[in-house]
Image (cartoon, rainbow, N blue to C red):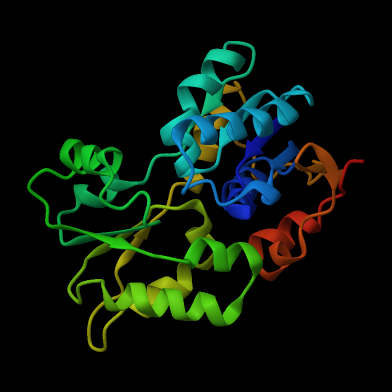
Length: 261
């Protein structure tokens, strides 16, 4: 069994690690194009073209399902990806976890890239799933880029700045970019106020991983033997995990797996 994941960069690590924990015996294909990121500032047509190139590289490895582990690509390219690959390869998009976060009431904060914050897409999700709930959209300029490059100083500054824009009484924080899940606990610490309980964080990695297994007809088996391989594709070329990926728990988990060449 084989699950592929795609993103512009290392934002796919969280979902890949989630699949790995659910099925340690599944082979993984991690397809990205770090030389073309970030995708957010580009037109929908450009994002779609880049996403299709990354997905085609993954599809050559004949996966049982493809996870679009990128919010930006899911917004702009999911229809095109499904039109090209399904039904041969089920394609699973990533949606910010606004619905489960809002189900417990507010206040809720949504951390997202500047391009996503305030977008019709995100506002539509808020209207559909958080109607009547107090929601604050928090732009996080530079955070995804800092995480991609493992720039610790820039990560700290970006998290601190976003935390300052986050209301002190939030009950939940939605991580609206897949990169942010790599530093979830650091974000939780930054938004926890003295004397107040830590807000609950809502990412998408586990739900997306579970959906990919369902679409592929694979049952979770977390106790299976850890025999699955990892193939890393950078702009279609087989490579090792990028060095910054090894600065995160998820990257180290995947590095410990035998890499297919």
